[in-house]
Amino acid sequence: MNTTELKGNWEQQKGKLKQKFAALTDNDLMFAIGKKEEMFGRLQKKLGKSKEELYKIVSEL
Image (tube, rainbow, N blue to C red; front, side, top):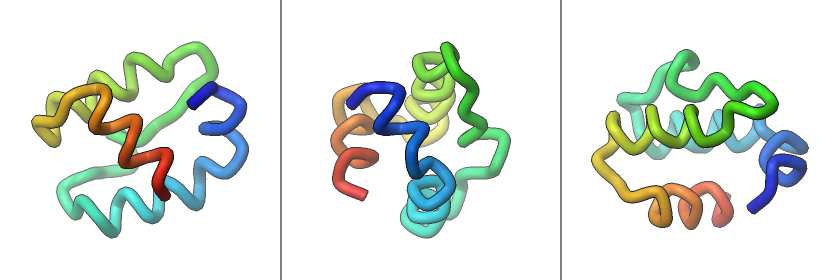
């Protein structure tokens, strides 16, 4: 998954992630260009999932 894919429909994906993981907040899902890895790091820490698991979850949305 590249930044363009993630950025393209991020608002929709963000809503789906918040439905799937109720503990996530808007701050957890704040996406800025060049900060994708930082955001995934926050999600990893909060959800206790590996980076690969998170990429798979987001790509399946």
